[in-house]
Image 1 (cartoon, rainbow, N blue to C red):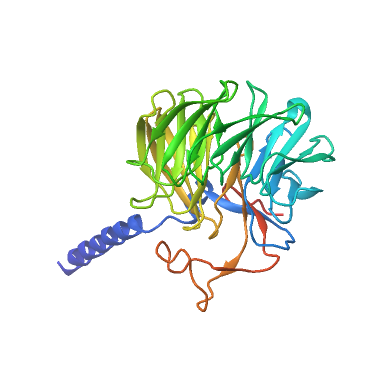
Image 2 (cartoon, helix red, strand yellow):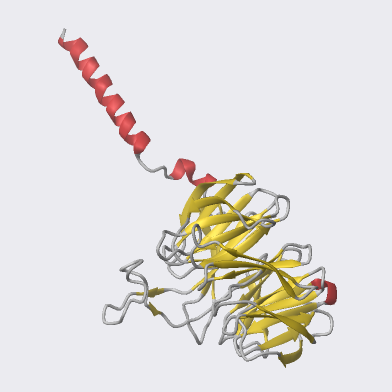
Length: 367
């Protein structure tokens, strides 16, 4: 009798243990399914502020806009710096135009540095405004669209000649980086007004203006899904929690809203795998979403990065994510500007701590 009771107790204990382990976070056995840090390239830096990274998926070159330190070009196959482009101080993003063998930086002082993509030599540094906060290439009009965030203006430049061709007046003082639809339009998030503008670039006019504040506050990153004609927005939130919002690009209707991490400044959609990637600097993580259909999105993974890591680029061929970030600490003797979001957010960046972080599915291969 006692023997049977012991067996029952052992079986019961085993069931309880199995339940506990089932609820415990998965580790090594599941690790290959998830994104992990696979490589890190340290970079010398004289300043602590950085901005966007741009990517040439054909040549496998990453262009890192480092503001004061200008543009650094990294070959992500060899993980080596191949160029430091001169006269690019103040760069916050780069528009790549292989068609004309040109790259155009958006510099904070209202200039653009025009350089050859083939050899990274500088053609000219041209002034077109008093300020600039980045730009993109719009193929139908063959234009570079720069946002003048302080003035609420989109400045347009001929991508072949480098000559300013016009401008479009919008609203607000926090214009975020636009995204093009490949049909002649760009979509411009206005962070301080909770607006989304559709701009006809060739016609140099506003095609539509949508108030998205009910679902999206402080839109700060955007991408476009051409197959479904959707604008995908990362919304930092203000009176509401951060959200990943999807907008019908014809009607301006918000068709999807999903929770997002704090401090997002970059959204990238990969049409091949139907995944959305977001970098969330305040939370120090990246979230991956799966597109179920045009109007439905489900988070599939959230992996840790570093505080302040708010921009990324995804390479579909290698399924790797590239993130630029500094390292730092919170000095309790200094003010934490983001205390209401994260009481322990980093407020002091270490010198020469900038790195290019590379994340891939599974651990790095043994050397």
